View 1: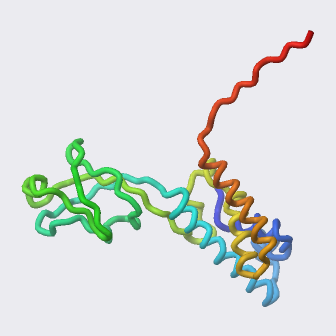
View 2 (view 1 turned 45 degrees about the vertical axis):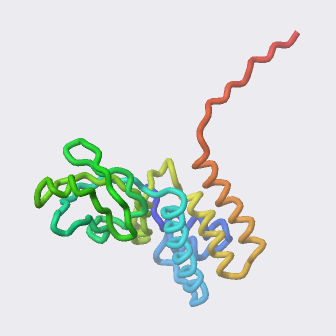
View 3 (view 1 turned 180 degrees about the horizontal axis):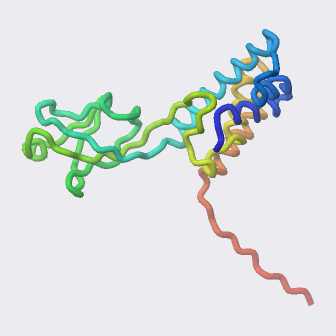
Length: 197
């Protein structure tokens, strides 16, 4: 189980902020005011990176039950469990329902709205996970996004915030390469057997 704190500790070690890395692992380590402000910057960087990955690269897909009240005329996104990025599918009794998506709601055609007052439906949509508490699990499966990838992003964000542009470019390249490797389609490669005479 990878937590946000594990990612921050990885980044602190990579940036040679050893005292901060030790304080994450061991709460008895006392930090100076400067180190506390650096730790706070690492935490803010972690939140920014998790939000960026969730919104731009790896949104999570979920199917959620909902009740469509025909007198409201729409299903409002504020009533969903998570912030909706994209609605993929709406079904009722196993059948796909056509819908129109707007900024804050989805609406259905008139024939569907005439089926009754309360219509149970299932909505499949993508949402961007948010960084939770620092000791909370990262929102993705550990095999998809791990402390290394998030740690690279934290290092890049930390360096940008501190005006360390050369280091920021280096860490950003590592971060983007790791994201690309995660998103690249996996292909089976076969190396032909060589024969020597």
